[in-house]
Image 1 (tube, rainbow, N blue to C red):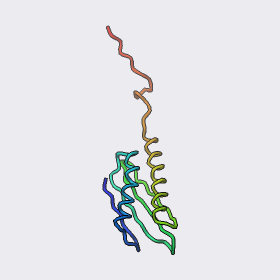
Image 2 (cartoon, helix red, strand yellow):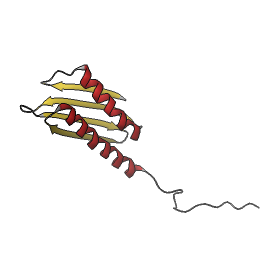
Image 3 (cartoon, rainbow, N blue to C red):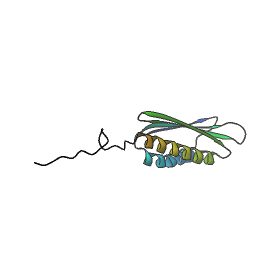
Image 4 (cartoon, rainbow, N blue to C red):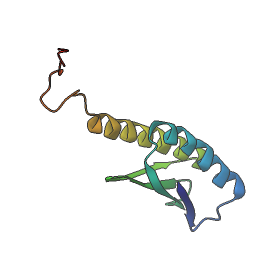
Length: 110
C-alpha cells in the first residue's frame, strides 16, 4: 500500500506521519486490496483542523473528510469513518452463493 501524507498550510511532522500510518494499519486489516492512500492535513480556520483521505481500492475510490478542533482527534474520527466505509464496501462485494444457480450440486457415484 502506498501512503502519501501531505500538509496544506501545515508542516507534517514525523509524529503526525507515524500516527496516521498506525491508524491506517487498522483499515488494512479489513481490506487487503488497498492500492494507495492519500491523506491531506490542513488548517481551515483558527483552531479548526481538516483531514481528508482518498483511498484507492480495487474497483472503488473512497473519499472521507472531517473537521475537528484537535488534529489527532480529526485523524481518529476520519479513521472511524473510513473503517465503516471499507467494511460497507467489503460487505457489498461478498458473494454469498455457493454456485451460480444458487443451489448445491450433488455428484452421484455409479
